[in-house]
Image 1 (tube, rainbow, N blue to C red):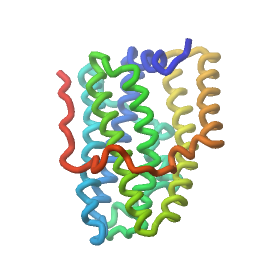
Image 2 (cartoon, one colour):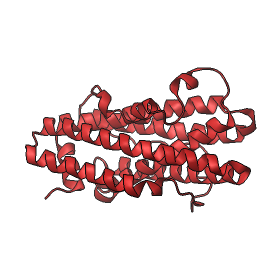
Image 3 (cartoon, rainbow, N blue to C red):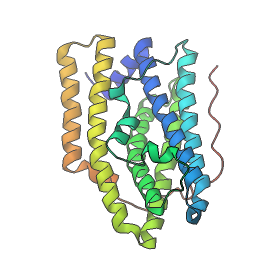
Length: 262
């Protein structure tokens, strides 16, 4: 019977598929770390109080990238090239979601609308990350090799999502509510398309590595399309709602150190 746990267990049990999974994850996290570091540097003077939280966000993402690399190293594996069609972060940028890398590479201060765009983009993508890590935590929190990593990354992603909610609500109270809702909707609708395309690409690569028969691959592809259809109809709305989180000031203070993998 196909299930999220059985599929990930297949990927985990095979060195080649595990290396690809970790390489894709590490690449995305490291890219997120770079983006947050640049945004923190370019924050406008009126929002300098936000800079330490953005720095912490980036530090967490960098940490996650190191964790995935450490998981590979523990098994004697090396990172592998990330196929472009599986690069979630870069595909989002190509769809015009978030702040363009060309802008971040310049040494020009960002504007307040840029910061709203960054937070709205993060609120959408951190929703996805939080849900994915919650699924892994549900099935692998006690795994001898993955457990500590899954628990830590899941906790961090929940913190990132809480931070986005709290800061966007602050900006909404300051009069930016319409811009926030417009940007959230645009980000969410683009993200669900990119997530569908990346999921299909990742499953195609995993299927070739693991030798999945065509009927199994077809069922998985149909499931991905079904998720997209639901998200396109109504599921995207969970990505645009805002509520004050239970975790307040979730990104105050330094990043927690990553676990060691002997």
